[in-house]
Length: 511
Picture (cartoon, rainbow, N blue to C red):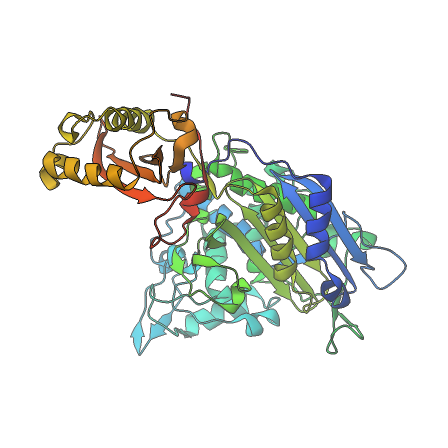
């Protein structure tokens, strides 16, 4: 289990807080730029609130929670999950050259043949260049037409494995490989592997199965929403697996929690796709520069592309997983907070709508209002035992030579006499240790992982911060132990920068 993202209980969003967050997302600017739009806040797969606007087909009908919008490149997460399911069954090797499944594929970089793999293609580091503008109008190209491009030889814009570039064509090769190993259309494989088992009955790759009055039509504006022009659906073809899907906010809420619940002790539908494979999707494999315009100025420590999903490391809230979708006439976005299962989804039927900004603003407001942890960590029992023993030894004035649970090297790296003198200096700085301390659980400061703890020992004028980190050998031992002086009420020294670990929720079974 990845304890750094394992929710134990989800903060409850109050109805006023949900309503405020939805209003912040679907603001006047957003409503102006699409004839119809919707934003929803979700909590562990359940839609907690919806805000709608406008008329989906520019007629008298109004947007509802059940209105179906095109989700475009959000389709890539479904493709990636399907590919991983086939990988798990042994049918598809994501690290094999794609030519094992598609022998005619050719790619060249600086005059030399290049090797592409499913792993490189799904994580957008294959070397194939950014192609959004071209693909938008070629989504309906036939399989023969796309196969001909690859057999003639694609030119790579960077060496494979070196650079993030968003390649729709590249990910479509994974869809073609799915067809090669199954002998069936990739859309059928996605439906049978994911949509039907998860009950996503309002999600499909084609508009053909929907009643006309449930579908949002596409529109374009070139004057900031003063006028709108109908935009026919871009056809779907060989590239449909990377961008043709339609869905509703309820289905996407379920899909987000199916993926996000992999980090919990009770993942949804483990028979559909292994939780470990879902976690793979949500691990950044290809670094992306931050700050970047694609992250709307958010305060990120890092970001990357996983398998069919973007992964942000927010300095306050930790891991946020997301993906947008855009085609002529549509803008869509989904995003969720890994530690709590709180998510947002936004759709608009104009490519100027800015669904990423809308969903991002709604989720940000919801997380701030609920004051959520950046993650939930359940330390090893051995971590807690070691920390309690060291805490008691320090407060009792014992020498470091008597601290229990230390690995052999600890007193070799810094001898006990040196540690004792440093501790004495720290105790003098804090004015002595207070004889009465709060319970240990109330003195905890941080736990970046299951193997470490930071806690405070209260002094008269300041506090002593203790940090113990264990090594995960069969009988874990303390491999490092450090001390620092911090001001009352603080968690860091003056020269330390904030970290998401400062806001982790620490859970264990008591003292």
